[in-house]
Length: 409
Image (cartoon, rainbow, N blue to C red; front, side, top):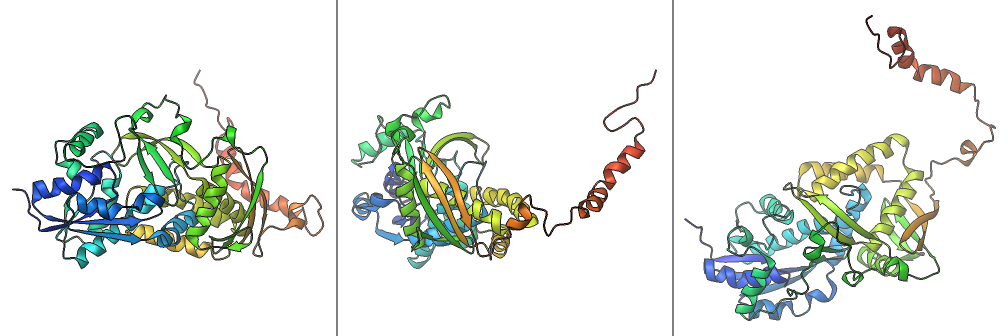
């Protein structure tokens, strides 16, 4: 028997899926719907959302401004941790979902809801991200996932459902891309991109110029960091969100931050997505360059290893997990002295570090030079003999020599 609900909070974006979920919830559950939109940098996409939600049957509507919180408490920790999923994906959508879910839960509890709903498909990662957050923050609330219940099986079906009820949606059968935009990035999926041999058309991109059409002159930008977090661009201190917006504009006009990826979803499906992350790409490169000065070898190597696990936790929707919090504590601790300035040069899709400096630099120009003053090279002999102790021991135990196998005659 299907569970009944009196009032359900829906994570609402105004896109195709959530636009039709409001009437679907009312038709199939007979419940009131509270539409919760969370602004994480969608820009103009939040305009007229309240009017649209109420017109399609929502009882209440809430728009939460979380742009600065998104940058400071989600994006920058992910950046500082060095978390990049499968080498290329800078976790724009993955980082936003736990914040959106948390705001949705807070409003659900404040308005007396007994259920939560989302518009994620049954094939994607987002269903896991939302529902793990719900379970961590309000396990007593029920969960409705329409894509796992209704008879709609394609975006074309969803468009037909909306058309039959007079619901305007921003997607047509001629423009089939599924997009997710926030402060950090813009993603493109679906439609012709489902063929991994299809080359994206230039008209699809919205945040970045093509490298071919980028300026013929390079541009240098200096980013300042404190405790592993970016704080200023070209000497001007900015809020976290303003800093990302500034670098998005600069990087976008130089064609920085495009990534065409076939990634492994948590559910086991390979998915092709094209991402535009201009500001984030600049920050990732700049921070790596600064850490080459401020982190000792062991910390740098351990951070690189842990960053992969951190990225998996964020991608898999385990933001509110003890392990993610523990890894965040590690990242915060080793980044205490990661402060300084990094200058990058942007030119036709390329982001190159050209200068780096820090008051906490572990780099010694005297030691790094070929000048032997102040360094006794004879110390190396003892170190090398100790370092090669196991190598020599293996040779003694293998009279045929390393890598050779005796053959019986």
